[in-house]
Length: 163
Image (cartoon, rainbow, N blue to C red; front, side):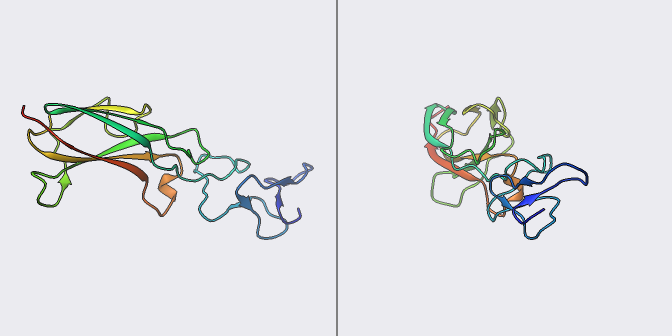
């Protein structure tokens, strides 16, 4: 096969052009390698385009009710070219706001769950009263783990009321 094309297996089939965001480095290639910043998940077939990580979620809306919180957001502008977009919520407790923030304790409840959310909303409860929190809403997809970069996220700061 000439450069820029590949043939996954020996036989009479013709050579095919490399999928989007991939290329060959030599003639006679059996697959195409992804361009810098693009990846193929382990389960992706060799004829699938290479994809990238999603951009950050957008337009976060928070509504606090005493020690519970509803977060809603809109999907990232760029999904990275994949259909397997999910969201992770990182919770940090910042106390009265004077010191460093730390990961929230196990007492904080997330509904439906903290990781792998498929819908752009979450209900968080059992927060401490009169406490500042930072929530990071990460957008991740099937190639996020292959990227050397951390997931893109939107951040929101809230302060709880009395219980």
